Length: 151
Image (cartoon, rainbow, N blue to C red):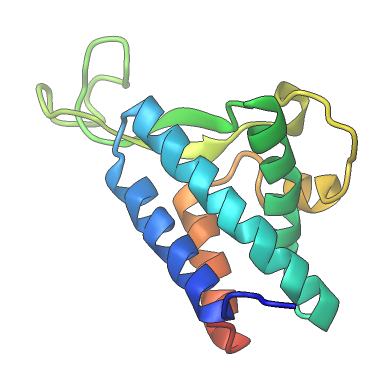
């Protein structure tokens, strides 16, 4: 059976992760990059599961992949991570007034995602992804792939 090398899949995941990181606060750019990340992660996870080399983060990405790809789920929640005191966006005195805030992305709670045919990976999603920083998850997966010499 003809298959592309693991390295191509990992490279695709890493490049999509870079696009996610550069999306900034643009919800549509972040969604498109995330869609691509979870697609790459899904194929990588299938291969690693066969080898007994998956990770909890990859299993959680499997769960969210199915919601994003098959249900068009908005798995991202925008959060202010640092920056200025826009009135109503931060406690005055905690940031320099007029400094623009910086936003990041967290994983939505699983209860906010559409139901799917399978709950595979939901426990790992809830334990290792939901409510956490998306970019940090993508970095952790990339580190796992390097550590296990995939790619």
